[in-house]
Length: 77
Image (cartoon, rainbow, N blue to C red; front, top):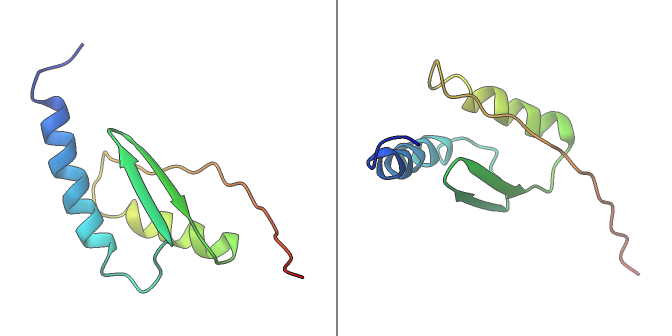
């Protein structure tokens, strides 16, 4: 089940990761995380999101971000 400190350490670690990623030029419109899941909304091309994920994966050797990308096109009238 893990240690009692695992959640506290994860919250601290994700806060540090979020601060590092906030320094990048490309940012999501929305970034919400709960324990080890992140939900984000982007208004860019898929390849730019993948570049962001590649950049995020370079900051720690054992923590890796993955993505399930859903593309939705909304046309304004």
